Length: 278
Image (cartoon, rainbow, N blue to C red; front, side):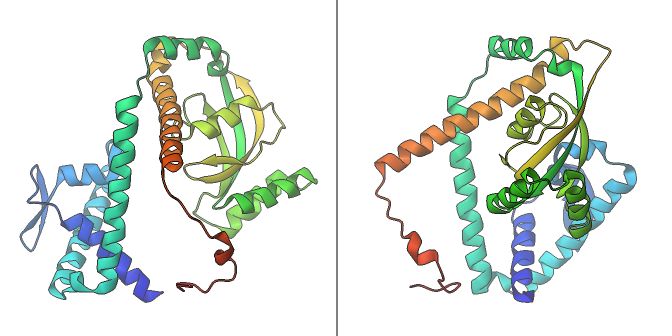
């Protein structure tokens, strides 16, 4: 396990340090190597602008630490380690896959204002509600399905939420949220499930980018102020774009499979030794 962690750490710091001489506002130097404000912003993404000054300083300290580790990795010539090379090849492969997916969906997906407005008119009432719901999140569909079966047989959803909070502290495997339509934009499948349920009802297993989830709606509270189209236009456009991107990608992937020569041997997965070439 320690060996695997070392390889992953070297991979992470190699990625952080493999770019050319950075351009931008220098916020630190580590043995002469600059760290820029733009690098920190890229690491944190859109959340950077919501960080406090102390949190930004903590982020900078983390980057300084990673740069120190990276420099030591170079000094110890860990880049020539076979496991590191293999991990880098895997990472390079994943980058190419992601860029190909991005190319496919960006060239074929366009969401117009008429589509956005039609969605708003159809779901206008949902934008007037705040929905409170509890959720359970699992890494596999099998685990989620087993939990759903227990719930359908009478197990308490709230007790299962508390148990998972205790069993997996800090992992956000369960909890309770209050949202309005658009707040779950990163997971349109989950948002659809939440806003289609009546209070007290439990969803089926929902596949999301963050795992397999089950939700139970606790309440729907009407908001006093009516939501205007202009206030949610951007949220709706992002939601529709994500849904259309997924649809386009799956159709493209199905066409690839139809024209490819694919052979699978699932029977060899059962009882096969880890790492074995049977």
